[in-house]
Length: 163
Image 1 (spheres, rainbow, N blue to C red):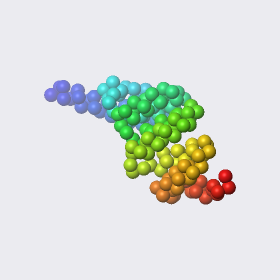
Image 2 (tube, rainbow, N blue to C red):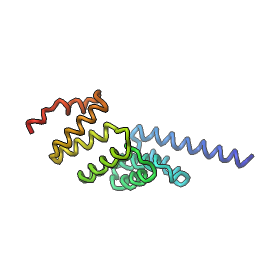
Image 3 (cartoon, helix red, strand yellow):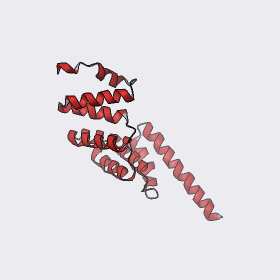
Image 4 (spheres, rainbow, N blue to C red):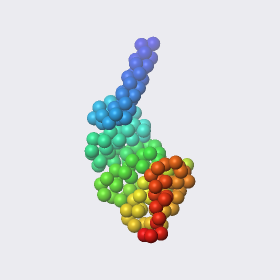
């Protein structure tokens, strides 16, 4: 009986750390979010979403290389388009454009139904590299998936024939 009560208390404490971490992360208090999430990592090391959230907090603190480590661990545990998207953004932040495109492409391939954000991000990087045809295909696909997104609508209006 006492052991069951202890386990319940631990679950409540873990949930409190998690909820506080989310609150701090959503309010750009990355150091406090990281502190809360790290309290959970020993017991929940196989939870990909936790690694993802730690990666976001570390990224928010400006340590992109360390964030990449946690995002890569998150992908090993949980193939999720949001994780691939954040990893690609981090790689882009380090100037690794082709690596970011590869990560975005892997995220698109592994995660049907497709997420318009990751497709649009790949389009923007292809534009940066001058891969206009690939970029246009991705912009059109992103538009099909979410025709209300303003950034996509703006890119869709652009006259690519003049480039």
